[in-house]
Amino acid sequence: MAKDIQQPIVLDVNHMMSDIVGYQYGIDACDVNGLSEAASIAQQNVQKNRGTGWLGWMELPYNQAEIVAGIKQAAAKVRENFETFVVLGIGGSALGPSAIQQALNHLHYNDLPQDKRGGPKLYVEDNIDPERMAALLDVIDIKKTCFNVITKSGATAETMSQYLIITDLLKKQVGEGWQKHIIATTDMEKGNLIKLAKQENFDLFFIPSTVGGRFSELCPVGLIPAAVCGIDIDAMLAGAAAMDERCKTDDIWANPALLEAVLQYIAMQELGANVQVVMPYADSLKYMADWFCQLWAESLGKSVTRKGMAVNVGQTPTKALGVTDQHSQLQLYTEGPYDKVITFLKVGQFRNEFEISHGCEEFADVAFLGGKTLNSLIEAERQGTEYALYRSGRMSQTITLPEVNAYTIGQLLFFFEMATAYAGELLDIDAFNQPGVEESKIASYAVLGNTNEKYQKKAEEMKNRPASKAKYTL
Ligand code: PA5
Image (cartoon, rainbow, N blue to C red; front, side):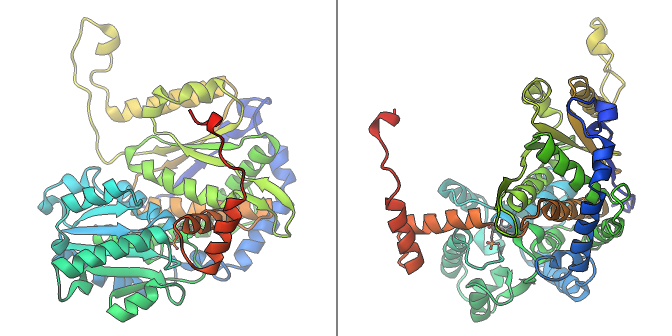
């Protein structure tokens, strides 16, 4: 593989600004400057606490030399001994591995013959749909499969259910030595997985206590599946470190993540842009959008400030794929409510070039495509969409990856994480908890009849909601 191009990713916010996109629904540079003190405080708070509290992820590009060596060893063992690698995890324990694999490996990686793939097939199982479990078991040979069970809390019902099913099958089908088919990635102390891992002597990697699920992609959560699939994890970490350097100043106009946080803060708080559509113009980046959606939604969607004042803030992130969703969503974005920001993810240089064949000379509108490339067509369409949004006075911004490679993806991950941390500071909320998710977890355990007192109480509470009425059920 050619050496990664180590160039910086670029954030272009021209189409967010009122002097470009219009005064009805653009951001005035003066308003950005008006937030310079708040932004400076946000930047200082994040920087001074780096590595502590929930900001352990900020140090991941620097403090994992030994861990990375261990990951590479474990990955080499998996590549040698297994045909298939299955991630069992959900949320922050699954979205990153999927995003990285999609971005950095062949788009039909699992379908490639083994000699072209080089590593095992990868499946990321982030749901408990019984049909999906059955389908997985239909296509893998469990005796030739390694399972990476990933759960920070070590207690998530979805992941632990998968664990129970898979370990039962391994015991039955593999018998002695079944434990060699499991790699556990979890918290060093908390939860049940760590106890099981020690009891069964699984290969074990830790998620630092200072790193939350959705900020964990650059620790063993993401690095193990990536390394198993042959991705250059050193380059990912180097890219993250390069972005970290760019995010160390409190000058809004020089720190891309701080600028991003300030612009989105103004967009959501002052312009009612409650939706951010992440629109990659590259199939390779479509799951990066999903990864970002969790990060932004779960971190910023909060009901109270850090002092407990009711605020109900957040911006709903959603994904659209360029160009596919031009033919599905764009009408809404250009003419629907003024409630969105569109974030384009653009690729400078694709890893392939594809020329469009000549033909249909009798039809000028078709023939003119001949001799051009799909590369120029996809970028022309992105520019066309940007222009259509501009014409209707809508805000958009473009993040360009000179090329999709481990180095630029490392930058992109870190950029979004930093922007999220800064936005949390500006909103004065705890960007690192997820009480709304916990509520749903407890309620579902109660429904399932867990006898623990906490869940019993919840079951009682749930009985008190108004009973469903037949007239509302058709
Ligand atoms: O960001 C988070 O903390 C969550 O989205 C978690 O990643 C998700 O709930 C899964 O949790 P765990 O890794 O503990 O199984």
